[in-house]
Image (tube, rainbow, N blue to C red):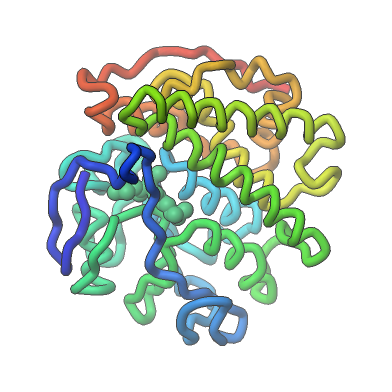
Length: 318
Ligand SMILES: N[C@@H](CCC(=O)N[C@@H](CS)C(=O)NCC(=O)O)C(=O)O
């Protein structure tokens, strides 16, 4: 693991934390938007017009943030319009790599060995973390965005006039409520599992794991009112929660010690996870081998011997 400092890779196994030992996730730095006419989006520069085969995604199938983008690409029918590379699940001293292995899809742009080379190619002086997902512009060789929540919204609507599949996962009338639920899900669940797993003090672990399970209890109750977080309508809020839930019992319960309850012990959350898994186009974005390999073998401070457990044996059938 490491990061770029003025375009130079520096190996560093330490994660940012506050004075009390709470894990802090860094903000993504590339925040431009692809729009139908190339005008600027809510943040960043203009000039990124939606065009077929102009954009490329760099993804890890292990990563929940990248996976939510993979889901949008799939359910919006954008597979033929936006190409994709998939990194090796192991993230070691050089960060994400394209070392060949099952499910790895090489980089077509510069034949990179490591993902950090893509960041340097786009910005020779980049300083910061080298994360997936990345939405890359093949025409200008710029990184459009490395913020998954914004890439999701780009894919949701920017390519509609070019023949993307129907479906609006961020409809105007629900935006306020979606944003409210996203806020809870992001802090307590998506990032919550990392705050639990990366805690380096007993008191911080206990505080974070309590927050996580309180949020899961709230969401369990919410799902008694309808099949999805917004009732009958499936939205981006569901995909954002799903990518954490689908990993929960396989990696977060064991590797990150999020183990007050299994997901399978929550009737509504478990039903919901299995239903979303079977939503057309979603199952193909979930790769449990990449997920387990990544977490159990990349975080040496948490699992020094790198043993990958065989279980749990989960039945996702409906
Ligand atoms: N805010 C980013 C977070 C992405 C992120 O943290 N991805 C992780 C993988 S799950 C990563 O690439 N980490 C590498 C690193 O931090 O060095 C997003 O949602 O797109």
